[in-house]
Structure formats: structure tokens, C-alpha cells
Length: 68
Image (cartoon, rainbow, N blue to C red):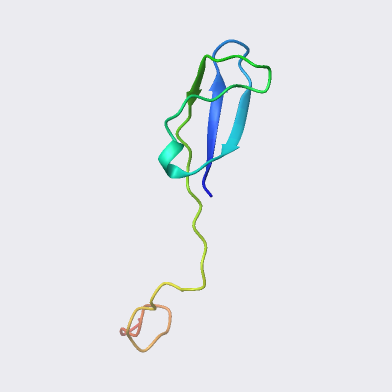
């Protein structure tokens, strides 16, 4: 389930909620009980087992070309 970051406009606290994507835009109460909150844009960190493809070539310091 995705997590969303919110900031309370009344007290300035930042908090996180886990909720379904279908409810991502619904209002959220801050931990202090204030209703005036706004959802923050957050960065996404993606990790996985797939590596970036290696460039083709013979290797060496210049990618297989002729070095000086």
C-alpha cells in the first residue's frame, strides 16, 4: 500500500499515512487532530535486481577504442 506525506497547515507537523491509491486525495487529519492538511509531493526510490545494460565494445579505458 502506498505511503503519502502530509503537512498540517495549522501546526506545521509533517506526517505519513498508508492508504490505497483510490483514497490518495482524501483529506487527512494530522496527529494533533487538525483538519487543515495538504498532501506533499514526494520522491520515489526504485530499487530492483535489474542492472543497467553494459555498453558494447572491447573494454579498456576508452570503451574498446584505440588509446593513445
